[in-house]
Image (cartoon, rainbow, N blue to C red; front, top):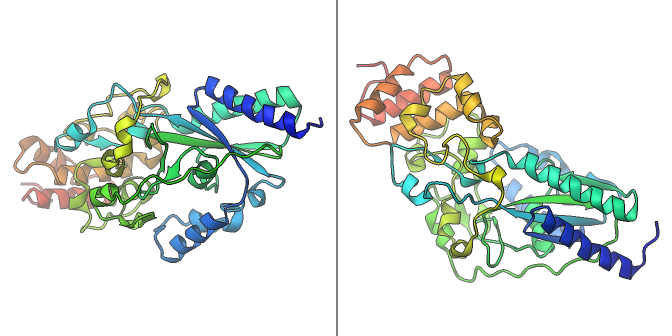
Length: 359
């Protein structure tokens, strides 16, 4: 079907309206020129900041050149959806309570990959119903895509010094998704930065992972250590992790723009299984089947039971000293089948002033 320039402008407006009706707070359109972001990405990889995330370099130019990933792509429809749940325990109170585990707020509800992918697919089908079959592919953190750079180009916000996307008036508690398309839609103006001289996110990082504005050393990042990294967490970083057992939100909690962040209206992102403030001594005793049951439908499940217990053991090592329940649960796991779990349990017991062999 042939469409003129005015028709494509009308279609772009319709796409944004349809997107909002599907629960996205904002939809924008970007071209495929990510040359500036490519320079930043190549520098980041050359400095080794990706750690063991080998996939960041494995796809070559596909990450920064959309048409190399999906041939024929000339535009990207970028969508933003808020996720901050209203019913969650206050994050600062959870972080201040060493008996509780802290889970990044994005992972408290249903796995966002499923939610956004389904909505984006529905949006693409609505477009097809209006203009006929067209080339497209949907992504939600599921392929080599520079999501934040594309969202910035599409006018959805700017990339802050903590490397997260910030939307003026709503903050950074949001998920992103994309539709790569062959449609020559008019593009939106990129968002200017409004971080100014602020360094609160850098100063708030518990492990100093934000080595400079816009530069994150993933090897020191708690989100990387608890989610992406599968090995033994460096001992020097363990005390700095506090009670964070899945991800870390400190840079977002410190960001002034998040004072305006609205709570999500999506029931899928509501707190599930009490993971907004789980008692550490209870979840350390979860069997593999219990872990699977309590993380059903959650993004947390992808790290697996072994890595989950590793993280909880570190948090217990950082808990208040001489707590009988803490000591007892750690000692119950000194003979765990996993060498990785045993190592972190023994470290935690030593932090508690006890022997890793029981006493």
